[in-house]
Length: 412
Image (tube, rainbow, N blue to C red; front, side):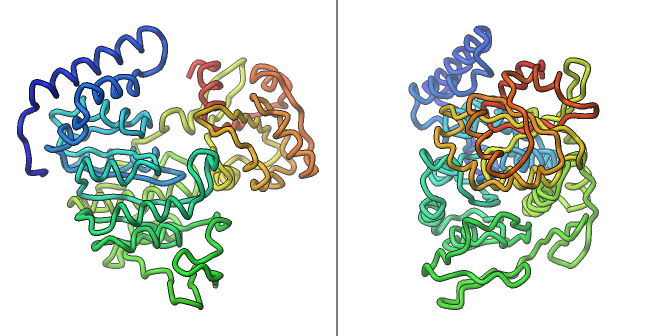
């Protein structure tokens, strides 16, 4: 348990109350969950509120480019075997959203918190976490987040000397570089299918070598550390060499990797792998991801992919051709306004699928698909795409705001 359990000051209590009121007004006005505006109001009244709300919790932070919302949910389910959990389950992962989430966790023992990559160091400073899970780093929202190497440096500097146990993906060179400044690291072999952001050595700038699943730099000796935990097929291998079966309702290799990291985190707090993995089976969907919905007499599976690495993983889990696929792309503030990343996605993996394109940037995506020599149809709405799609369940893949647009339209 976290040691400091002092009651909240009158100022902090006022900030929490005002934040909850602002969130309630936002919800009543139909503007979402209200977690962000509520947190902003609360932090305006008490800038130190995040740290105060975290003082009685064993805090676990989860950060990555892809998979952090799902992994946060899996860790939360696993740790509920050991005590009450508070978590930002809806994915509001910047300080305001995190503050709102913790404001509802006065009776919790654990705080399982998803953190945007850019804010990890600051949130870690404020919340004094017991554990930090780092999954991957890849290009995403380059107009806002900057290059992945810059994020890795920011993580490395921010986590230097941390007292937290860092649970890190040994297969991502950028994550290994960022984690190596931490005194206590548990390495997990979670896999890394996307390698286009990890060809140069983050230590010296040399060219990384990738024999099989290993990687190393011949110039400076920086290399993949030996993992304690590993994903092996449909099993988690623990540090003792025992293999524990993974049974998930969530699809795909990436979610097995997320479960492996989650089991390693849970073990840090005394929850055995068998118990942790059994509890993860209860997770059917995460903030709408993977939900199967009925719309206009058809079944749609809703999938989120925000960047090249995410699209690559998503292509690996959709049903094979001739399953129809709807692709939805926007470029609003929450997505990042730069769509150049479309050219980094290997859309040829969709060959044989009937493809339908929607979203604010449907014409940008159409040009990309034309260059990939794919057959597709541009549509004005999800309604039109569904009506034109041939029989069978439809896979719908959207980036962030396009995904949310579709969820609202289909009533999910």
